[in-house]
Image: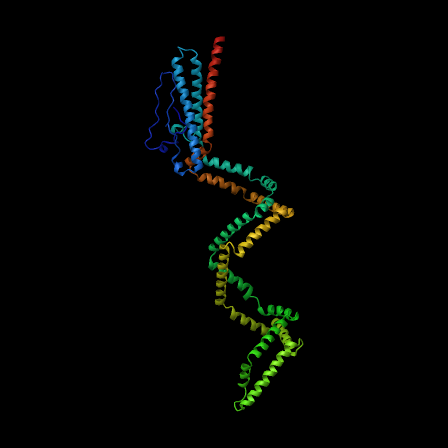
Length: 467
C-alpha cells in the first residue's frame, strides 16, 4: 500500500527503517502496489522539536489526513481483492471490482502527484518530481517578481494609502493616553539605547569642533560691542547701576569700621589718633552721602559718567583694533585647547547623565513632555482635516518614491531569502502549510476514480450488450 510521505531520498529515511516491500498479489491478475512506511515522516531538517506550536498543530493535522487518504486506498484494495475473488460467483461484484480498481488507480495517481511536489516518490529520482526542492530558487525568483509587479507598484501603494486615511487613524491612536504612554516608553527605551551606542570620544570631538567654529573662531569684540551698544542705548545698564549702588550703600551702612580702617591706613603715621577719627568720620559721611545722592538722582553725574564710559567701551569693542586684540587675547586664554577639550567632555557627560536619568524616570518632565506632545499631535491630526490631508499626501508621496526607487531591491529580499533556505526544509515547511489541503486531492481522486471506473465498466458492458 502507498503512503504519501515517503522520504525524499534514501539518506533522509530514519535510521533502522526497512526498505519498501512489495506485497504478493492474491492472483496473478492483481496489480502490484508498493508499500511505503506506515508512519509519515518529515525531512530531518524539520524535526518536531524545531517546530512552532502552530506548525506542530499543522503537522498533526497533515498526518491525520495522510492516514485517512491511505486508509481509503487500503479499503479500495481490500474491496477489489474480495470482489475480484467472488465476481464469478456473484456477477454483480464485477461493478464493485471496477469501482474499486478505479479508486486505487485514482488514489495512486494523485498520491504520486502530491508527493512529487515535495520529494522523490519512493526515493526514485523520476524526472519532474521533488519539484519544490529542485526548483526552489526559480520559485523564489518568480515569487519576488510577482510581488514586485502586483504589490510594489506606485498605483497600488498610493491608492491603498489614500483610501486608508492614515493621519486620521494615527491621530485617534496617538491621542489615547494609554497609547501615548506606551509610545513614550518605547521612545525612552530607544533613546537610552542611542545614548549607550554613542561614542563619548566622537561626541566630545563634535562639541569641541562646534565650539571652535562658533565660539573660538569668530571675534568676540565686535559682537560684544554691538550687543552692548543696543543695551546701553535702551538703558538696560541702569538696573545694574542701581543694584551696584544699593549694594554699596548697604555695605557702607553695615561696615563703617571697615571703611574707617581703610581710610586710616592711607594717612601718614605721624597724624594724631583723634585726627584719624575725624578724617574717617568725615570721609564716611561724604561717601555715604555721595552714594545716597547717586541712588536718588537719575541724572547724577556718576550715572552719566558710567553711561559715557559704557558707550565708549562698546564703540572701542567694535572699532578699536587694540581693544579687539585685547579681547581676543583674553578669549584665547580662557578657551585654550586643554580647557576647551575639558569643557566639551564635561558638557557631554552632564548632558548624557541628565538625559539618561530623565529617560529612565517615567515621572520626569522630559517623559511627561513627550507624552503631552504625542497626545497633542494626535489630537491635531484627528481634528484638523487640512493637516491630515497634508500628512496623507506626504506619506503617499514618500511611499511612492520608495517603491519606485527600491521596488526591485525590496522584491529581491524575497528571492535572496528563498535562495538561502535549505531545499528539503523549504519543501517540508511548505508541505506543513498546504499539505493537509492537498490530501483532499488524494481523497477526491479515490472517489472520482471509483466513479470513473464504475462508469467506464458500465458503459463498456452496455455497448457490448448492444453489439
